[in-house]
Image (cartoon, rainbow, N blue to C red; front, side):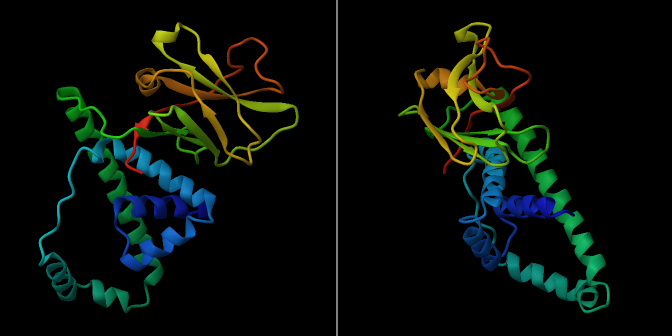
Length: 238
């Protein structure tokens, strides 16, 4: 795995909850000064929170940990840990963690899809997040919004400045017509951009947002130049 893949996997384990207490504390400390790790955690929270927020946490049986340790003691895992194959075991563990987290996200998405189709539930939060990324690459921007105040913060993650170019934020909704509308330019990609939006919360909640790269000063046509990266609002408890 590359460094970025390791960090993304660490972020996924942090969100899903498979880290030990010490590991979790270490990650919480790292995210305070590692912006890419913090962004990866926010992205994973955004992917899963839309489904997981609808379910109450359930405490495991009190004897579960002891049962797992007892089963490990009786298996060949302890022998393998003491053998001369730590690299092979770690690779196997990484594959297991990857499959487990991928399956967990897939199961959550399928459950969420069925729940939303059969019984849509209004979000219990006014704070939302949108992740702007291309395919499975690291996020370029992450946007948080407070629907009550209609204030947004767009934080750059991997966005880079380019001479003579600027980033522009857009909103699209059937209620606004067949063309996206500009929400203004973003500040220097090294700094967050803060804005108060002029639209009502219900429109913002269902809209699609986009960020495009434009000539300095913004799009000359009033519509995005090229293909923008998109994001939709996902409720979060954070």
